[in-house]
Length: 275
Figure (cartoon, rainbow, N blue to C red):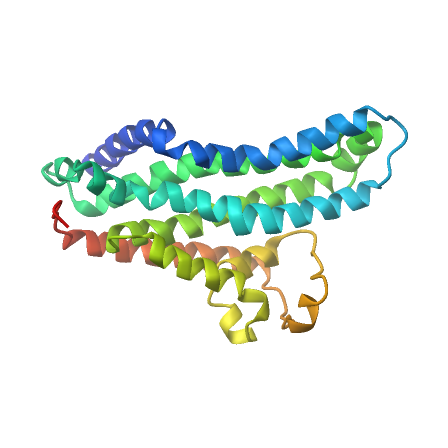
């Protein structure tokens, strides 16, 4: 890649970071990221009021966070947060009638796609990986020395690293999906709804169809498995989790394919603000 291309990507990245971080329409994304942290912080403060009188164990807290991460982060916070961030990178410019300024510059549109994606990814990683780490570290802090021992001498740090990796890969995968949706569809909410339904039906799909999703590989990388409660457990189709050495490169490859397709599509994109 030539130095000129790198400078152009860097210029788009800097401009988009300012717009994405301080977007007035993105206030609800910050609420999604802060929500789980508020829950774990309240749990910590409530338990501090009754030291030595905990009605649960450290292992139960670990299971609680695993469920919080699976059902709140992966299925809601990261999914909808990435939808709000990445689908607006192009569609938001169309609504504000400013996309033509980019298209009038002497820059390849593939570089524009790359710069916008990197900006959205930087924002998503900051919000959702940071939120994951903060929620994990505050949930069981009320156990005091036992929590420190679990964190530094037990599986705590390893679990934290796994959760942060899964959150980051979720941002990478869903970001590529929703960037493509915002570029190709006039109303990206419609394909987003289809993806949401498909991702949430994943536990009940046959083994082959399970693998045509992002959530399947993300769940395979989670360090603590969350059992499915009845009556849904009778409908779940059991599948062997995908090994890390397949899941991580596989997710990155899928994201790369979607970005390449988005870059190719951007070449033929025409602006019609009257639509």
